Image (cartoon, rainbow, N blue to C red; front, side, top):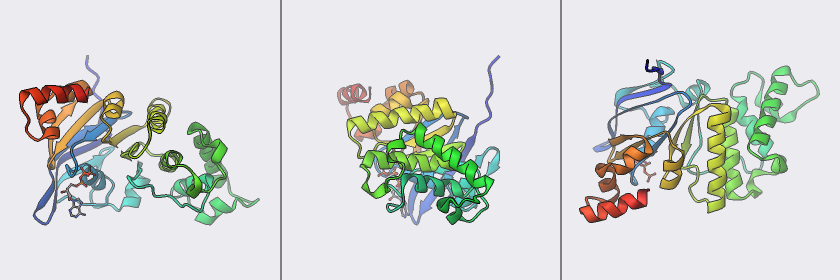
Length: 271
Ligand SMILES: Nc1ncnc2c1ncn2[C@@H]1O[C@H](COP(=O)(O)OP(=O)(O)OP(=O)(O)O)[C@@H](O)[C@H]1O
């Protein structure tokens, strides 16, 4: 008997317009618990817009997005984050003057009731809630191999480590779904390999579902369980990495209507 899994997130018929410009046109997909779901597509295809609809930055004019069975539409980004959807950004958004530990504690803090400065002050009378948070953060610091830099101000760290701190801050929010916006953009080969390892560890050890937007095809094809391809705001393919990289519509989207010969060579590249 086939096992039916209830989706964690469902997007149904999402349409998003900016004036006359259609950023997303009737896009539907679902993300299953524990799945690594990738969204790819040429520049301006609508990938970031999809993230912005899920995380409450944009409200689509049509369609529905549900997380664990109830709608996220119309909710503020902080409320959606509190429901278990955390996000990293294309451009790192951290507090440069604060340490790695402090940045992670602030990420954790939106879940707590005590004032934010208490998390940083670490007073002798610090409440139980703060102590529990501190233990979780210490676990994440170790998990992400950040122990050696835990007290360093984020501003002085190399780019690849900053991206890892940003990942840590999103994980500190204890999400069930993590949105990764170009996690390896601008990274060298070694940093990319490290990040790929951490993404895999998040899936296997923490069991989190992830949606990843990424231009690095090798990373996508190596890591993702399923891939959705969008072009000009439309979903043109959805399937396993093997299925989408064979799909002529996908190859054509990347090349803009090519001959059979060029398609074949693109297929090689996508492999
Ligand atoms: N705030 C906005 N105002 C007007 N148009 C927007 C806005 N955000 C996105 N768009 C438009 O929506 C379309 C999709 O953009 P989006 O940023 O989602 O693409 P993308 O696939 O993430 O691109 P890239 O790979 O370059 O990051 C583009 O035509 C873009 O110009």
